[in-house]
Every structure is written in C-alpha cells, then in structure tokens.
Length: 186
Image 1 (cartoon, one colour):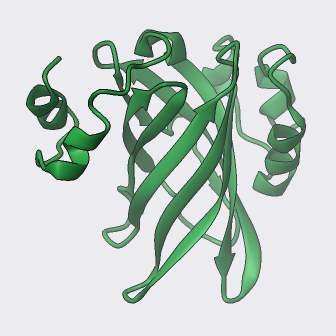
Image 2 (cartoon, one colour):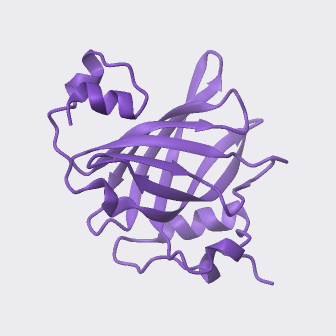
Image 3 (cartoon, helix red, strand yellow):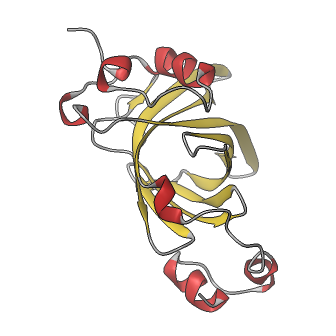
C-alpha cells in the first residue's frame, strides 16, 4: 500500500513524519492481532494512581493497519462514573504497533501509543501518551494480553486494579486469558 493510501486509511495527513516509517516492513500481517485483548493501564487523577481495564476488540484493516474499540463488555475506570471508551487506530512497523487513541466518551482525552508485539502475538507491551492538561503530557505503561472470545458477551470485568495486576504478570508463554480470569465472581 502506498504511504498516502495508508495515511488516508488511518485518518492521517501525509507528511514527512508519515513517510519516514513507510519503508519499515511489518513483521507479520495485521490480522494476527485480530480478536479480543484485555488491556490495562495506570493514570493519575488528583495526584493519585488510578487504573483502567477493558477488552479491546482488534480488527485488521489491511496488511498493516488495525482498529480497536474497548467495549463491550463495559470498561472499568477507577474513580470515574463513566468509563473511558477508547477508539484506537494503529499501524504495524516491524513488531511495533504505533498509533493514536481517543476517548469517545469525553471530548478532551486523546493521544498516541506504541506497543511492542511480543513473539507469539499474545502480549503487547508499551506506552501511551495523552493530555494531562492543555499544556502537559502524561505517559504510562499499557499492556495488552490476548483473550479467548468465549463467554465475553456475558462478563462484567473485575476491578481495574485487579485486572492491571493480572495483565502485568502475564508472559508471552501464557495461554490467552478467559472470561473466568477477567470477570467478577458471582
């Protein structure tokens, strides 16, 4: 795909930065990332650490591009009455997914992400950046772990801090998480 076509597909304006990475081949087809992933990250609120956890549903949009939405099930965001509903667009460069995200439940929060896709394509590990305020940027660790789709439609996610701990301890050699692993006990 030509760089201008790729840029249009992910909503970017072609420019020197977009062309800079166009020659870096993807390490595998984007559809290897398709499916549900439990994601978790920490963020600061009023100077205190809080947690967010969700299930991102990744779809391939060609050989390099992916899109993801983090619902259903309903995401969990500590300290918020409405969870962060994120939409994500990204492109593969080698074994890295580089892209942008936007919280569509709020008009203010958006940013960038860079995730290393570990061999086996079951864990993605990296960072997001976002707006801490109109004049500052925040950055935090963001980890994604592949999840079995069975039973996800009926799951209510566990507390975000517990899911954060679970996700951060997973390795690329672990099997995908299940609905029982990530859901609240009844």
